Length: 471
Image (cartoon, rainbow, N blue to C red; front, top):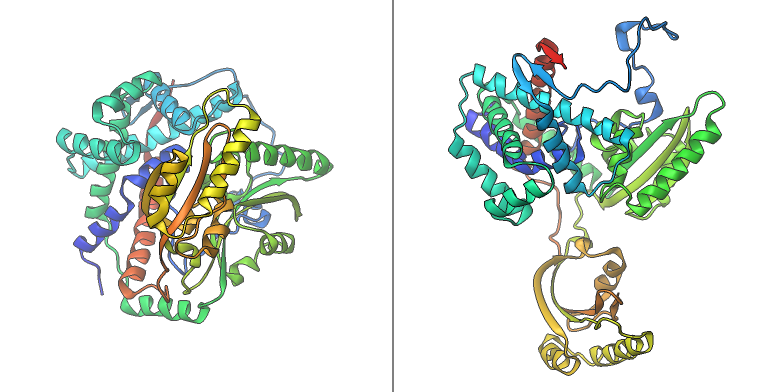
C-alpha cells in the first residue's frame, strides 16, 4: 500500500512548530526524537563512536600543514549567494540564550555562535531548495504561523513578543525567518517525499509489542568522555564537576542537554545525549556497568561517573514504563489547592505558628465540599485544576497523590518565599487499560520516522552541494 500525499501531509503536520522550537532551544541539529516501536536505538556507547574516520582511512597521527587561529571569528556566511549577517547570528543567539536563561563563558559563547551559524545555514538551504521547487510561502502565512506560535508557546500577543525580543537583543524578523524556513521545508517535503508503509509491516510491529507487553522500558540519556592513556583521573574529576553543574542547573533547565551537546563524545551528542526508550534487549547492548546502574536508579536521577570501556559516562534516567500496560502515573486528578502566602518580614516563630494552624485545619477537610469553609478560616486562596496527571507533579508529591483517596488532602508543603499549600483530591480518572497502539497510530509513527529520515538525507545532500563562503 502506498501512502497518499494527503497522508504524508498529515504526517508532516504532526512535526509542527513544537519540533522547530525544541530544535532551536536545544540546538539538537534538526534531529527529531522517534517513537517508532522498532526504530533502532543508537546506544551512544564508546564503541558507537570509535570509528570516526569510517572509510576515509585517516592516519592515526596526521601532520597538520597550516593552522586555524581560534582568535579569528567568522560571524557571517554567504550561502549560494544569500548573505547571513553578523546581526542575524547575534539576534538568533540572543534568543537562544534568553529562552534557556544561560550565562556562558567566552569560550562557550564561541561554541554556540558556531551552532547558530550552522542552523542559519541549514535554514537558508531549506528556503532556497523550496523556492527552486516553486514552493511559495506568503507573508500572510508566515505572520499567521508566527502569531500562533507566540500565543501557544509564549503566551504573548504579537506586540508583546516584539517588545520582548527587542529587550533581549533579538528581533521579530529573526524569529519569522525561522518560521519561514519551517513552512517552506514542510511544504517542500510534502511534494517530494512519498512514504510507503505496508499493512504487514504495521502488524509485525503490533505483534512485537504484544509479545513485549508488561516488560520494562527505560528512557536514558548519557554523557560519555573518553579517557585514554593516563587521563582517567582527569576525566573522572571532569565528569564529577559536570554532574555538580547539572544538579545546580547552571546552564538552564536542560543543563544535561547543554553538557551532552557541548562535551559528550558519544554519537548522541546532537540529541542532547538522548538514547531514547530502551527495551531489555537494547539495554543489554550497553556496557554492563551502565545496565546495572540504570536498573537500580530512580527516574529523574543522575548516576556517575561510571567507568565503561574507553572512558567514563554520566547517566540520567528520565523515566521508566511498562510496555502495553497502563501507567498509574498517567491517572488524571481533579484538585483544589489551598495556599497562604507569608507576609514580608515574618519571623520564624510566626511562620511556624501559621504552618501548625494550616496543618491542623487542612486535616479536618472531609471532601472538596469543605474546602471553601476551611479556606475562609485560614484566609487561604483556592485554585481549581481538573486535568493534572500524577506524572506532571513534582516528584515529592507523586507518591503522596498516588496513595490519597478522594476527599483527602496532602500534608502542608511550601517555603518561606512561596508560602504554604495543600492539595485536596476531588477526583481521579485512572489511566486506560492496555496501551498497545492501534494500527493507525503505529502507521503514523512509522511514517514520521521515515519522513524525518528522508528529510535529513535531503538536507545532507544540500549541505554537500552548497557553495558557502565564510567571512
